[in-house]
Image (cartoon, rainbow, N blue to C red):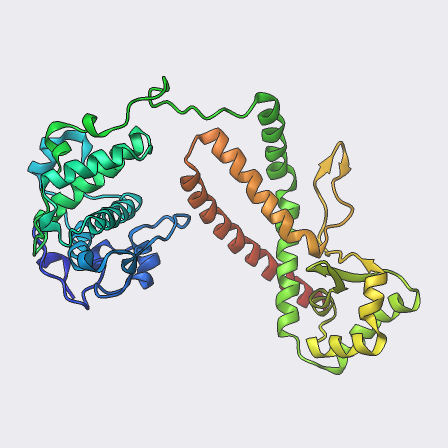
Length: 396
């Protein structure tokens, strides 16, 4: 394995099939398990970002024409692990960065594969044959693809990176310098078509819509979050208890004590809906009674609860207090096992709306922050659940 102190970032050694795709000093600890080897047909690149919400993109080399795979693979590895020389960056001002973001890396490699397919269609089978005149034709070809000026400029920049990092690789393929690198890209860009001037032309959400949405998103977080998190914690506790229950006489007695009165009085039974079918809520019943899955299944068959549940569907109330209010009245009479997951999703959406609107953060940044908040909330919820369980044990 090549270690960071041994590296010249401007002239990397030739990798072997077993060389890591991303060298260790660039790998994030959270996603280190994704790292693969240089010779692999698929290159996952998620280990380059610490952002938990970022798309974990991969490069599939089987989509690249076979004649260009070795050349592009080496240049891609050089771009991932190397750096452009300061003199190269200085000549181009703010247009080029020494190290690239994950999104730019992935897009650049995919654009290289697109170029390789275009070259292959013209009978060209190596990058050394792709000189400046060929790249001039490619630039004109991309100008006619109706991608828009901004996207076309991004494509041209990716090809420039291919030339720059090829020169830095341990075995340069010899691709020509793109003509737009020295002369400018204007001749290769489609004509400007609007007066947007690069501004965001997306129609903003109307104030009549955004106002009430923001108000109720804030109310969802401020007034109902405590109830929803408590309901989710109780749901998780019941589900975990149901999974770990064992068949005991005491559990069987508790199961009879819980369901027999409902059956005798023909009262609604605790049910859940799965794929449009209403069935007995076995997980909920197991969590409430301590009965095992086999005990509940056997009891259900003996009492024909499958048909009874479909005829008399009922709620699965959770033993958590309801503290949130609307107009001075509780917003729910009880919180239900079946709605806890939906409520958690709505709470997360409300938090996203509030945070994104008030901070102006990008969606990806806000998703990452909410991921950390959710992790913290789950930890707090687990601690609260443990405390409630301990209290019940002490009372018992």
